[in-house]
Length: 353
Ligand code: PMP
Image (cartoon, rainbow, N blue to C red; front, side):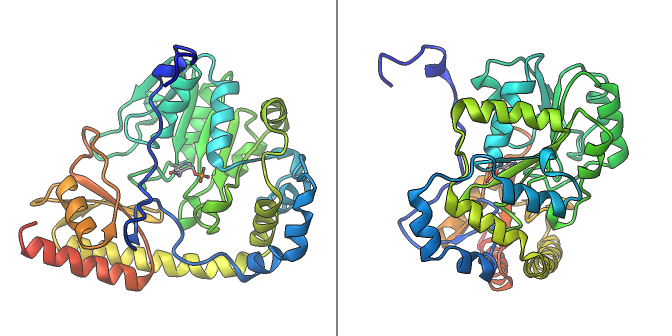
């Protein structure tokens, strides 16, 4: 750290992403990426013409992509904000709407506390129930910005629409952010509620179900006034926040819904098979509707399982936080990758670690 840094910022805890090691080829099941390549149309769109056009700035209004997202979600382009990953959308939402404080769960996406600290916002942590479900009562009438992921990370568990409506209607003066990064893997989206609830911002991403994590494209859907607020921050920080290649890739992905639908069907079937197999081996596994499973075993700890798998060339994610340190989070890969995972776990359990 230099002696020039603002002293408050010098004390911030940084978000620690899942490891991206380069020492060897791992089966990478640790950052919830899609196991299949982007749709063929994405590769066709990133052609030499598009690369030549990098000479020019990208469209700061992200018009075409917003139109495609709006058409897919049956809303209007003025209800869509596009960010550099959904992390940027969340970042702006904390900055713009979090002044009265932010309320989120004890076990959820690890970036929420980081954004709250960055903007020095009061934080209220609402512990999940014993079974990792959300108690809606913790958020009803709380008088703060609410941030809930559905499916939640790392549990994969979802919110009920009736509960979201209660939370929205009891906090009319605060924004409720529903982070739907993983919604396409089987959960119910809350996007339709954005038409009736001016305080709802649904955040989603191209990183998971559209296989574009490296392109960094996310989006928020909400009332046009909320979207204008987010644009105000974008236009005072980085008006060209989506680069040309990523915009083209995301547009082509929006035109390839049937490709993604098919791959998502495959992934869901792999998830259910993997879940059953883990349960047969004595794991407790949550009923995740995301592209990952959250699993704990009665005889081997989370850290020990993570290390044993890493030694065998498979990366999963372990969190050392209280309540979940016995678990590992396993991204759903291809059927072949999951067969290797299951075989290795079986051997690890047989060898006692
Ligand atoms: N929300 C949740 C719940 C996540 O797990 C992630 C992925 N780390 C994100 C948002 C951010 O994803 P991205 O910035 O790649 O869109």
